[in-house]
Image (cartoon, rainbow, N blue to C red; front, side, top):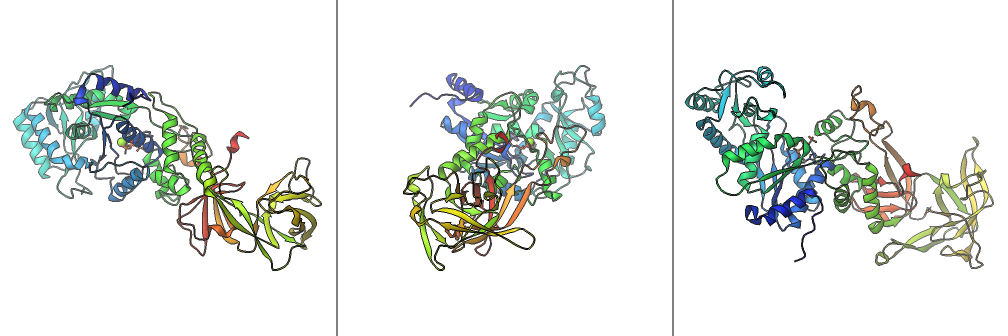
Amino acid sequence: MDPIVPKNFIQQQIVEDLAAGKNDKRVHTRFPPEPNGYLHIGHAKSICLNFGTAKLFGGKTNLRFDDTNPAKEETEYVDSIMEDVKWLGFDWEERLYYASDYFDQLYDFAVELIKRGKAYIDFQNQELISEQRGTPTRPGTDSPTRNSSPEENLRIFADMKEGKYNEGACVLRAKIDMASPNMHMRDPLMYRILKQPHHRTGDKWCIYPMYDYAHGQSDYWEGITHSICTLEFEVHRPLYDWFVDELQDSDYRPRQIEFSRLNITSTVMSKRKLLQLVKEGYVKDWDDPRMPTICGLRRRGYTPESVRNFAELVGITKVDGVTDVALLEFCIREDLNKRAQRVMCVTDPLKIILTNFPDDKVEEVDAINNPEDESMGKRKVPFSKVIYIEREDFMEEPTNKFYRLAPGKEVRLRYAYFIRCNDVIKDAAGNITELHCTYDPETKGGNAPDGRKVKATLHWVASSGALACEVRQYDRLFTDPDPDGNKEKDFLEFLNPDSLKVIGDCLIEPFVANAIPLTNYQFERLGYFNVDPDSTTEKLVFNRTVSLKDNNKK
Ligand code: ATP
Ligand code: MG
């Protein structure tokens, strides 16, 4: 086997751990989402890192739902998360876990810590507990019950579990160090009372473990070797290690490693804010194509390959930063350029009558399906007397640099013929209603035998066989590159009122008639589009995934 070339500092650390023979040279990671929302592109980065890294080293990855907070969690989220991980191309095989699977074990271990004199019940309220924690430079104050006996604590903890106390009446705290310079070590909470049914354990529990307590223990029981998480957990690491130290009964030991989270310009990434966008109707749903959610990207036309490639390109570092959304768009363009079927669609039709074309004749011209991939072959596109082009491809009085269609000017209709504009027809109000043109039958396929050139090639749709369709064009959801970064203003104030533009009366060639949802296309000269799930044979609906070029770089 070729030696593994680490691509980032985490993989480098794994190489070192393996060289040192740690954990029987196993590599086992986990992806631990909390099922309180849909996954977003930031999670995709974490998924690619966890699954990708384990794969690189021939290891395994678990999917574990961190379902320790019954108040915000729902089965809908669990299902969507599984769908998204699979869609990205990763497989947890039989290793699907829930932190709630460990509620019994976590309870038993908490009892054990109480017996060891390392955990105690505190009856003070949250405010007081926080206040007594002190500040990083000032040691905390002991709780009055910090030194109560294990027997006393065991009895109360059992009563807590039985529901004999109200929410907020008391908590279980680990007894660590009230003077630690790390605030997370100043007797952190392990359990709180929540009288809420849980989506998996129902009414069995009314006390729930805190994330910091549940997480490391779950890692331990699953045999995780590298617990990869985002940077904000760096300060929790001593606590992670403290709990593991208490639990450890062999040489095996999981190790927490932190990396910087992904942030992207012109969007928000916190689940709370994404939920707000959905709940308050600023977007249609979690899978609205403007959302940075994985299901939103999927509906928009992103492919798993493009998202994985993006995750690879942004890299893994310890430095927080913001990635330009243009990089994500670059990744999907690159992927679709290689794969997307080309078709012609006219979004703002201007009618052309080819005065010298026989009235009822329908010809077929050959069109190339993808110039990047010959194996995709060719298709037939109908060509007839009435043709539509984009209104903006015509100018009655062309400006200097306008090379497209104008009175007396000749252009190429892609794959078809040269046409020349002879007459401009207008309605009473002076609006152009149609153009009368002639086509040159000698130029079939788009080349003139006499070698004459035209300066423009236009896409078009012939009335024969044309299908009506709706095109949804998306722009950035927020007008500010950093909608989250403004302390004075709420992120909602930066919502882009023009983020969705629905164009109703577009025309598209008949090739797409039976296209199934999510199929990707390139509409020649317009961009990459896909079939929206709302699409039916009666009414085709397309989403614009991305423009052909980065418009901001013009
Ligand atoms: P949010 O802040 O959006 O609510 P979270 O961290 O609470 O996200 P979890 O469901 O707990 O969401 O996250 C699951 C995993 O995904 C964690 O390991 C977390 O570190 C990682 N993750 C979450 N957001 C990002 C991000 N923006 N970039 C990289 N990894 C992320
Ligand atoms: Mg979290």
